[in-house]
Image (cartoon, rainbow, N blue to C red; front, top):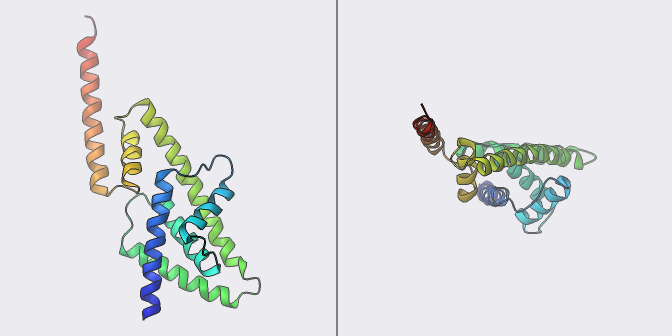
Length: 176
């Protein structure tokens, strides 16, 4: 029972660190994504790198980089189940790194997708701070994590209204 409690607590801590690192844009994935992932794992585990911590960190990074909405209890429980089943596999596999490499690959793929989405958000923000993608990018960066669905809906309504207002202003300013 205590093991599960401490595992869940560590997983939550790793997810929080992962989210803070990813949304702070601390690392540049455009040059060497693999090296950046290594640095993220070291940051998350606070340099306590072993197979179990690395696996938990890969699961946390994979989850936080693919989620567009805040992480809930279901996500935590699913990640804990993924960890437990992977630890069992680690114990039975001859080359033990097989499971770690699978999770590392998942984390790297999800981080690269996250990086591309972030770059698109930056471009949108630089072109028009009041665009939906630009506002979501900016607010997620400030929040150091994804925005709740309700906030995203509010942003959509706000940006739609702003777009209508901008079109009305342009039409008023046109000569007859």
